[in-house]
Length: 205
Image: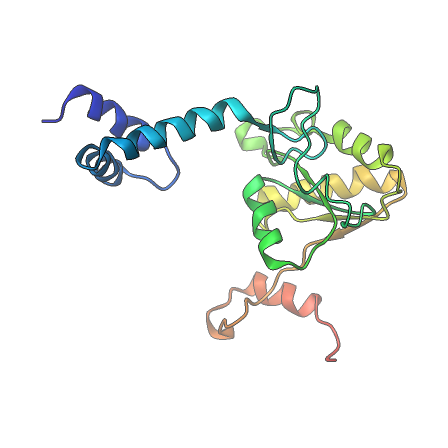
């Protein structure tokens, strides 16, 4: 029912996270019915991203590709951040979520994956050696590593592995707290969430 080129676009859109076939078809038909300039601009932006965005050489965040061997992201090059604080996250999306909170002003390290035996991801697949080099190579000693992996089975397993591996370096390893979300109702919170909220309780100020 659709021309081949639109069908190919639908197939590609459908590979995006949380995009089903109907939504992908809606995207493709929207672009086909609009001014061709929008489709061209989208295509040029995608090409520019593919050619000009690379992992940061220090933390794994997204960075602009440069002529020099090392591309450094805006966070790593920000001199106002505390280099003694390092937050370890699983994905760039997690880094962005923490940045939106404006509660952390240190540096980051993106693992890119979590420990997951069921998916064949063992400790040897994690960039532990690069993380150790990142901690030891800085001019200002890292005094705390905040492990901000998700509160899932794989995230908890990764956090335990990191704690065991990094304590040998003499740094303080902390875990991102979890508990009842702001505006949430205790009636609908699961026992694990309530238990963590109680364990992580603090005094009222």
